[in-house]
Every structure is written in structure tokens, then in C-alpha cells.
Length: 244
Image (spheres, rainbow, N blue to C red):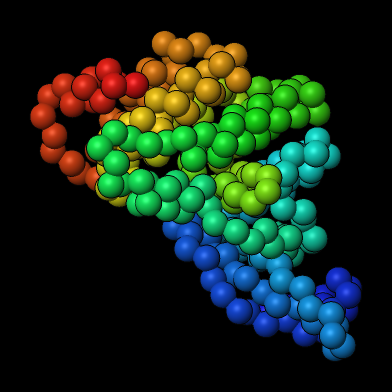
């Protein structure tokens, strides 16, 4: 994938593609690098379709790393791609899906074991916003906040920053809650209970406006409904919102 000169520049001799990650917009490769001896390391190469998005994501990764936010470390920008640290572990989406699966037998939604992960989300997002305000002077938001873009380990790592832009924090809260509600199977009692807790925690931790956050959630649910071509009865979103 890379020339011998480039490999030598970053301190390796060999590079092998050992996996790929699903992505609708980019090409994501898991690479194994070796120096010809016993030392091997895995890294991710994210090849962007648009150079402007690559530049935006690179800048954001450097900003967040300088602010001590848990994000992958950039090794090198190569062409339209970013070679970065590989952060192993399940996504938050996978973690919550697992939690719902093992608690489905309860008559009442049981989310106690997921509240720690919710606190991690709130703390990470607070660090993201505060770091950007301090280091860039801008009110930057994720722009595409969803649980696919977080890796959960002993601490939470954020990945995927190509959609970052200036905006309101309530937009991110509405987005991450809407995506959480609509992952398959959508609108389960467990997901509603989790999102209610998530919404309350994020509003408190981030100091945002509840009414505006709920409006953003409403708008995101409408967008998702249209994208998926779902035909649901009038007032269905209002019924969902009332449970939250």
C-alpha cells in the first residue's frame, strides 16, 4: 500500500492490510506494520474521498489530542488519508446492543449497568466542547454524533471528526439520542429508558437547554424516518418524545 521510502520514513519495513472497517463515505484499513524484527504494530489508515474532509478531521484530531481528549494519535497524513493509532474495542453501539440483549427478559427496562457508559459519553462530550472553545475560540460540535463513533475501553475514545462544524450543543444531543432510539430494533422500551437517562444526563452535564435539545431530537427523528422511507401514523414522534 505504501512505498518503501515512505515505510522507512515512519520506521517500518513491511506493511500488510489485515482488515477493513465498514464506512459509507471512506475507505478504512487496519494495517500491520513490522520493522523486520519482532516488533509489530497495528494502525488504521483512513482514506478520505474528499481532501477538505480529511484536512478538517486531521486538524480536529490534533486539537483534541493537545487538549488531552481521548482520540487516536495521528502518525502521518499520507495523500488523502490519515495514518493513525488503532484503538481496539467495541463501539458504544455494540456495547449498548449487548446490554439490551442480556436484559431483554426483564419486564421493566433495566439500564443500571449502562449508566456508567452514559457518564463516559457526557464527560467526553464536555471535554470535546471545552477543548475546542479554549484552543480554537469556536463553538464546535460533532455534527454527526452517534454511538458508532465511540470506542469503549477503560476510557471512552472518540473517532470520526470529518463532520465537525460550528453549531449548538443541543444539535449533537438530539442527534446521538435519535440514532440510539432508531438502531435495530428501533424504539424498544429499553432504548427509550436509556435515551431518557442519556438526555437528562447530557442536558445537566453540558448545561444546555432542554426544550431546544428535544426540538433537535424531534427534527433528527423526522430526518431518519424520511431517509428510511418509513410510513408511520401521524403523531408517532410526539408519542416517543412524551416517553422521554
